[in-house]
Length: 305
Image (cartoon, rainbow, N blue to C red):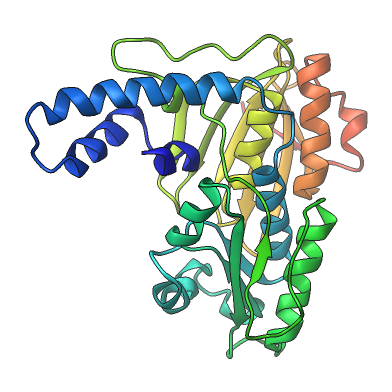
């Protein structure tokens, strides 16, 4: 149960059902499972309110997006074990882009369990043999370790290509919207402070929020970092004054950023890095809107009547 809570992907009902199944038909299993799930949910959300703006899991996700952009497909909670992870990691490469990816990095479900328990995150890595630019195992390992360090993480790796990379941390993800709600109750409001309303869709992972979800700035950045860089995956962020920024991944791992202007019936946009978008989300949350001038050199798309 604590694993599913910390992974932040499943709602209350799914976690309660999993807990009931684990009790294996014991008398009153459903009631016991729901009671325990309610207690664990309450404790998790209370703890979440004490977290700093940036936690170690955020840093891993940001490092993994950087690796994706560099041609190393990087995933957390990928497959059940290392053998299956290696066999299936090629499926994480977008169709038609196999030549652009030199290698991979991932942590599988057993690694995630260990990380949730506070034992640190272990990361496997390797090469794709059909890449346009060949790579070697040690080189991929160095790039993975460097990306993690750039985002402020401690990395333990000797440089041996036969050794996995270890990152001391406790894994946890923010819960928001329906992922933080209990049956019959509305989703809890985020604490006071910098807030955004967010909708998003990650078609590849089957994860989405079709209606506006109020969340903290940290939660909005979490959504951005976790958005798989596959074509058409998108997120829309609305500030307290009504300003909007929206992003969409395009083919070739390019992230399109735009600010729609309903009054002028146009959008101002350009390609951006996830880090640049994060900086603009901070402005959006704190100022309520983002001036076009802050976007830099943009293209203007005039809407049809």
